[in-house]
Image (cartoon, helix red, strand yellow):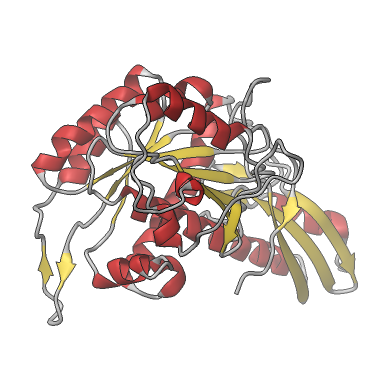
Length: 365
């Protein structure tokens, strides 16, 4: 029996995306199905280029195509990332998902986590921006190895700087001397944050990652009041002295009705040269925060000098040493975060999450 487009379409339509437990037909994910002899061409739109389920989905598509007689398959991959609810006064309406990275505690590595998560998502093929919202202590310029002055082509909108193909904005770009203290009161900080959201030309992004300052002060409060965020990522370290402050960030999210997407436990353990694991700061802190937040523990990042070395040199470890243990941990966390965003949006919208429409994913090297 000869291969037909109808038979191929029906077989592939039954493939299920395990993240939302829906078939490609239900997701309207088959953008192109063509047949020529025993050869076929299929374009599948994934719910996120960073999803950990993508390899299985594509393998199942290939198996379904072979089952109906396809001998040569040209499988193209696109993306149709779901979007948060955007109101008419949203300061960045073209940004599908806004994800603040926060903690009530300083020194737990929020900037490290934010920068590496942003790069991990970008390297998967997602369109990503990184906003350094830590007005008093901006560290993203150093960590991303980028300095310069943002420009405005029309005198109104601000063009963000770019590094590794990502759009980046920080108060650090506006300081004459990076060692200069920002001595501002709350209203000035709130105004700067709103400018970074509304007046920066972020364009169409799948994810905008925000590196928030420690605590539960003006910046975080303004953000939650002025912008519909998809959900927050909470960063902690394992020890009890960190947890007591991190609980406060979780409590703030709960009081402000901000969904917590998950918890990242940074500096979880150290593996010595003999392969022995040392839990220098104790254990279980991330799990306890996750339980309190009623959210998943997205992952644990090991202590590794590569993270510090490459961060100081302006190239986060995910970009500089992608095969290293900490880079692998960040990639896995990014995959779980992308899946969590997808499932949360589907839950909020009763099983159907809005999208701007499909796009073809670039080939990243």
